[in-house]
Image 1 (spheres, rainbow, N blue to C red):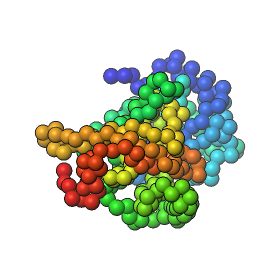
Image 2: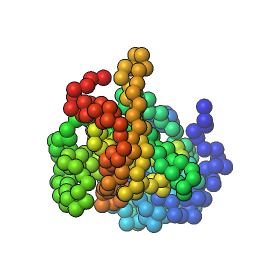
Image 3: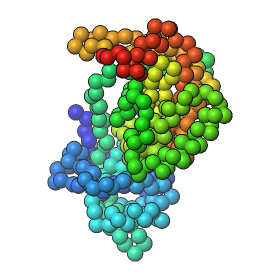
Length: 311
């Protein structure tokens, strides 16, 4: 098993790295048990969101004290609480647990003796459908991106407005009005029903996601699928980019019977008609229509989307 706690020398290197600056951190209130096991560090059960702090808001003194400069007001609500502080060091995800204090200059954190590595978490889920999106890079190498259904999305059901959380509906309505205008301009959105899932995806609250290794490509999320189009969601990542007006190969795999591993494969050529994004340019949705698909595959997807075929 990989060692999770940094050695003394490693801690000193990280401390100097923090002192040198240009290190954004994320602070989250947690419930701390006596064990140092990461599994015993849990977010508070009440609704509390992590706060991401930019590098210029973080000043680390040589004594190992972090001073927060002009932080959001929500940070002051963490005063006296145990918090988890996460950051990257040479692309390796690290964290420590400490107490938020407020001094004359503002919120402050003492870096403890123990700094931990963020561990990989394996999401073991069985998917009835998966896909792989492929495209050529620089005309030579081929990029493959895994695609899985987005958690909580009924990708074959007709999108309903009430699937969007009530607190997000006002912002989602703003996006929907904007996206409908774009769809009318491009005339490539079909009946536009997929826009509801798109607005839901980009307005859903999301925690700052720290991983064991920074910048790894996550699977794309399938938000909507029928016999005419597929919509994929993804978060900003410098490792790849998808563009409107480009065609992509998509290979879908449907598990028809999990007990016998019977499956059906479908290969389509998709045209990325439009890429929607949130105002912060952190979440994106690529809306693709099929430019090449076998008729029997189109019929299969139609029956899936209209609930005439059951797996």
